[in-house]
Amino acid sequence: MRIASVLTLLAVSGGLTLPLIASADDAEVNLYSARKEALIKPLLDRFTEDTGIEVNLVTGKADALLERLKSEGGNSPADLLVTVDAGNLYRAKEAGLTQAVESETLTKAVPATYRDPEGHWFGLSLRARPIMYATDRVDPEELSTYEALADERWHKRICIRSSSNVYNQSLVASIIAANGAEATEEWAQAIVANMARPPQGGDRDQIKAVAAGQCDIAIANTYYLAGMLKSDDPGALEPAQQVAVFWPNQSGAGDARGTHVNVSGATLLKSSRNQDAAVKLMEFLLTPKSQAWYADTNGEYPVLAGVGMSPVLAAWGEFEADDLDLVQLGQGNAEAVKLMDRAGWK
Ligand code: FE
Image (tube, rainbow, N blue to C red):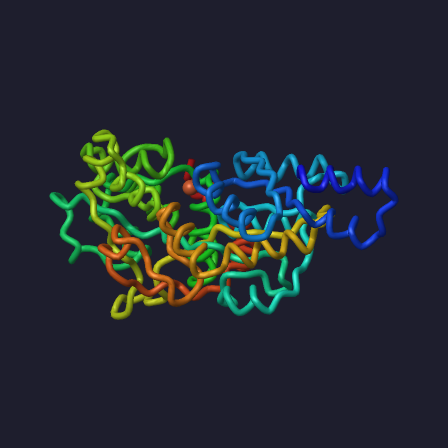
């Protein structure tokens, strides 16, 4: 930002030629991020060191940023949105806020299932939403698939957050894609019957409830458990040590499509006035070094192949991920929401 304003001033007063103004325009990127500052800022600083391009960071909740972009419209100063969940990336595209990027670097780095087919968004990291269980009360031999959690043996033993949360909407959309809406609605009814309590709190609260004995099973995103395991706060660390990860829907299970996964990702906004710099930043976020830092700091898996995972995640072992095209999580979202509502999933 500083570089841009100084150069623009020089151009006005000194009559500098156009190409310099054009490059000055590209000396900054305005980034709206649903990731907290600590989870992305050091990487942005490294980008600025490498390229001289300043990054102006605005952080906020995913829903709030989307609303802000809608109200700012074409006047938005934002170039890039980094947010979580393919459902949110899909919403941004549907709202007409995004534009396509043509970058061989990006399409090579991100597997096709983790990006928009028209290039409107690209996954930056991968999170899984497996089953987590109380190690003293559940034998992992009893577990197999998401579908099998509908069994009566789990009556009043499951904790899971509200259906208003996009993570559950995306999970249910993935089950609709696999089994159809009717079977998924029956499954959702059975899950509601098997809930230990009406949904409350976030994923961390479900893990804590399992540790506290309020329920035996939770469904939660992996990075929450990773964050708790890395915490110095005993209030987070101790509950996390009492639960284990079970990867559902692996080979040999009845429904062996793989465990549900989702992404955090980046999308170039239609309002962008610094497109070249914004694309450069997206490409930077997908270099091996950035991927290793970003995935480790966020407790997630890299999307770029060949980048190692952090020891906490490695300890849970490898797993097969559902290879569903994540665009379908957005496409199935409205149906997932209606279906959960009918099933009484608060
Ligand atoms: Fe989250």
